[in-house]
Length: 58
View (spheres, rainbow, N blue to C red):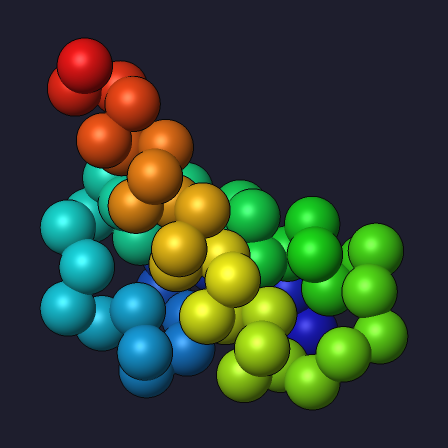
């Protein structure tokens, strides 16, 4: 199942919309590349999206 802006993991609920969108994109990519559990994928996607956002702000 692919996550979308309307259907995403509960752990992403409190993220800023721009970070949530990036986290969903990353999580969907990780789901295709890895066979680890979904919680690990969500946590890694959130971490990467937050780092991406911080780098975006400079």
